[in-house]
Length: 240
Ligand SMILES: C[S@@+](CC[C@H](N)C(=O)[O-])C[C@H]1O[C@@H](n2cnc3c(N)ncnc32)[C@H](O)[C@@H]1O
Image (cartoon, rainbow, N blue to C red):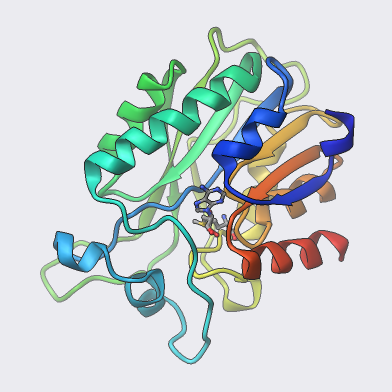
């Protein structure tokens, strides 16, 4: 375990999770592929750059990434498998936080419960009024969500909290290193739900935002990433 601390490993999290001992992690904070986007099944199996590139700056090319073309039931099955492994490696009362969009929210909350965690709520991430709507008459897709739970009881924290149930952080292109990258200040708030020197696991590191935030706030991290391009970006970020 010691040798994995503050490292990002390249590979499939289902394999890499096996290296972690039972009851060793204080919090899982992660942003898995949503397998979402588009208005129908045909659109959802397109490459991530086709699906999510539109919502960001079209002039910036960001590489594609693995694991984003599953149909709904396959995504549910897969989520249950890796969440169940997260349940194994979490300490008792450890936190589990998983990002989701509106479309995958019902499936994500099912997956958390099927993975044996206790589902405790949904936190909204408000991306601001600049968010897209398909056309007039539509509500903007302004929020994404963080499904959260614990392994068993949720203990009273001593170091901080209660934490906000809603965060407002716009996506800034200067702070975006992945097609679906999350704002660093948002991740900085989330990593502080556990005390300093705790161990945070992110099985879907992407460009390494969770790890960079953990490092900045003196939390240990362990990260896994399957796409080599993003693994390289994440490594460079945590070295900085
Ligand atoms: C939504 S992105 C994470 C973005 C990250 N939050 C950021 O701010 O950069 C999900 C990442 O999970 C990776 N991934 C997909 N399947 C994986 C797997 N089985 N094991 C490890 N990583 C995987 C993808 O390559 C992708 O980079």
